[in-house]
Image: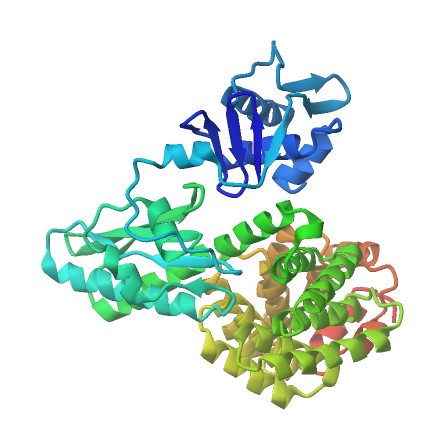
Length: 521
């Protein structure tokens, strides 16, 4: 969609603002703010509306909001004094008051602005899922041997990313056509038909190698992630593996987070099945009754839009299972039956997807009680994608439920290694804490429980872990505090009902600690 006002053209598809033939430089957040105001120009938009739409409801200071509004005004030649286009209504909100014309055809301003660019290939349409090209890394060392190292590492990164079936990855032969060339990222995106581009460089000096990488949105040109890694240059192949894990574990959560943010900005009536799945995933991350209910609704809608979407079926099933485990279910048996039905549907649609297998093994272990099948699926999930946080996390829980806490801890540790900034870390940390309790490693259980609590203060399993571990150590005051917090979050909690939710037959010390903490039987 393009909106025209005065001499400006605002193109939401290309995420560009033009003033005549000129492209106006604008940050992604300011673009989103301006888009929201223009789209909702028929009404006054409150501060809360803006914060929810642009910042996903995160806490934002008045100063930060004012800064973005001023930047939006500046981009369209407006000021806080004139308020020619963006008007502030005291104690009410903001409104875009300029006369706007909507267009669906090609933007002449956009065409004009790119008339100087010679495209070697026509622009390709973006796939219906996240797409990325990994460009050859620049060899900054002047050492031809480093060329082989850099190329090998890029190939490893491409292979690792290809294991995420929700991600469309350009093959090595296409990416390497840009080797040795000065490239414009937006052009790469158009020619290869991808939204994201990963580029980097390698420099060798004094027995060390330094690798820098950056992930760029090829549509907007915005930088999403950048980091550098320095390692001793010893075993080249081991080094390639190490850096590949570091790069993939950093950018994969960023990619997913960016895609979720894009999906949540789209109008509900225009959502695709994948948009619904991403929104469902975001809600599933929230350990609240409302979040789980919304995750189930959105995953169900995704499956309606695409009946062959196995991952959506698995997520919907996990939502029903989560209702049981967190004590949200009004009819636990109904939710359990739905979880198992959707597990079977997901596997019938795609039993070779590591994420689907991860969801499925969790449902199988908790709600079917078939640990042998669950372990088989969990092992296959990590074999298919050893870089998947979720596969390792679910494997950890499956082994913990099966009464194998040492292997569970190894899996949880691997999960934390491959995705140290994952928004679901509290799940792995809580599971690890319970495994530590079963091994009488209570101090380590407390450390894991506290980390889970800090990341997600309303996640009840973190408090179960803390209450039990503190009680085993005779730290009664802290045990009672954790138990009280647990009952605030899960008022209907009893030890017997928790056992009935599933997966606790091998949690003997965990259960004993909950009793010592004074939780109701």
